[in-house]
Amino acid sequence: MATSSAPLAGVRIIESSMLGPAAITTHLADLGAEVIKVESPSGDYIRQMTWPIVEGDSLMHLHVNRGKRSLVLDLRKPEAVETYLALVKDADVVIEAMRPGGLERRGLGYEKLREVNPRIVFATISGYGMTGPYADLPSHGVAYDVWAGLVKPEITDDGFAAIPEHPSMGIHAGPLFGALGVLAGVIRARATGEGCRMEIAQSDAAAAMDWLRSETWKAYERPESEVTGNASDDYVRRAPGTAGMRDGVRYQFYEASDGRYVLLQASEREFWENFCKGVGRPELFEANPGAKFADHAVGNVQLRRQLQEIFLTKTAKEWVDLGLEIEVPIINVNTPQTLADDPQFQDRFPWIPASRLGADQLPSPIKYLDVDVPLPTRAPTVGQHTEQVLHDVLGYDDAKIAELRESGALG
Image 1 (tube, rainbow, N blue to C red):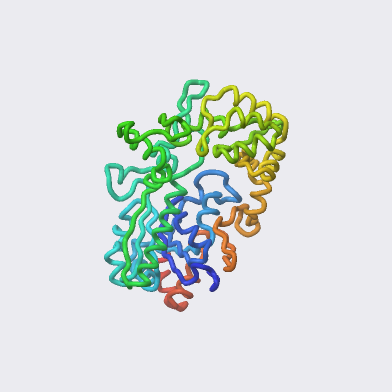
Image 2: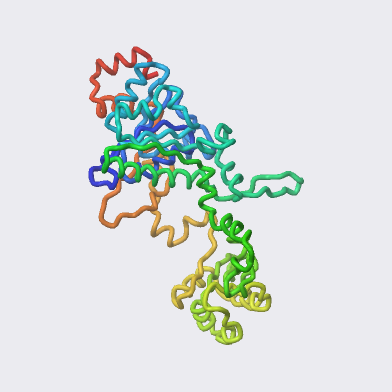
């Protein structure tokens, strides 16, 4: 349950979801919104999907559905549909986190919901959205990143195409964009009394997050008299996004003495000068002062070799400490496994323990300095809060709940 002081206390969300798109409300629950996850009697099979499985439940379920309450309604029964509408009457938001139209087919489309609550915000989040040739195509998370050009096949030693390790973008960015849209809708509804309908595709979100590369390629379709590279590259067009960093020198990975790597980002002349003086090599700056901004010294192989030798003189931690001392952007290269040992991570991300959530989990990265945010509760079992929600939210007494159960509306 939300605490009264939480930023989203008083916001009630009715969620119908399957699998990862349910993350659209995770962020909102973390900030104090009341999220009621309405499930079929068989429940959301996210509990068995992906790995690891922690004491019978998937980590994905434990994370994505934390802080929510589960109510079972068999929407094939008219009594269950009536109960759903009763929940919507005093809610702010209805989430359809599944293929578009799922609620419409059960008699709970947007127009029906508006009849009972004109200020309802109805949000659909799906793989490819409600329109376009792929709207009805089934999908899973990696598909959105592949479609958006973020992940390329790698070829194994056996000659097979394989999915490489990669950060997932669409399944995380889609819910974040969706949560932003939901909150904007709630603000508008509370100001005007008018709800709205919105939809978001996780594939769209993956493409939107990678806007720099796609927009750069689009810009490069124009003649070079109109679109060039920057001054530090003598206006020669560099490859878009991170691809343009591959041959950088002042902005590059370097191995430290302990075998770990650090990233140097001395692309501004000020940082580059600080670095050269800080390592006792002012002559490197005098010989290669570079441009004032955005200079990676691309292709300067001699300078790159000199920096290789310099970085082998200290450990990764020593380089980060020196960067702090001399005002130079240097950071150690982590993996998802080593990140938890990083002092910056340990300061910013106190684990929420498995004793509370079923698995050790990261808290919300949103930090309020003067407002309390509740600790999330463990992701629910199927229907765990059915009677509690019906009693607390709708005011149903034991006899009414028993009647619903007898009708089969509660599964």
